[in-house]
Length: 115
Image 1 (cartoon, rainbow, N blue to C red):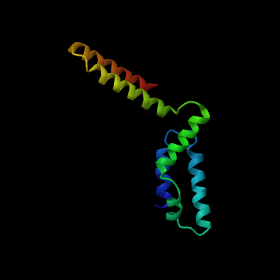
Image 2: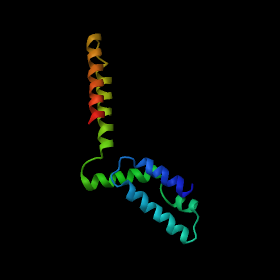
Image 3: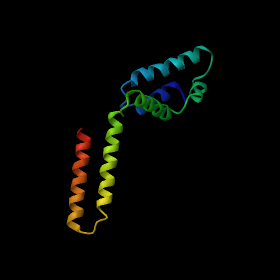
Image 4: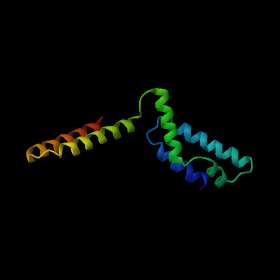
């Protein structure tokens, strides 16, 4: 993998991270320093973690430092909660109640997307 592909995948994986540009810049400098030392881009990329895994590590570090998850994580958890609440409520037999549960889950998903 070359540096352009690696940095593109890292930028995508860090889409909602507040320090995305700084992190990508640091990794780009790492590639530059490695090339200056005589290593190929493929060797440098092989020495790093996969871009998605590196992004997860930066997210975990930010969570530990700030004590609160990024907005993307909060949205994911809200949608997961809404989907599981809908699945749980579907187990109840009355049809009218199932329709209401589906409507509530849809409203919760819209609220999660909005804010």
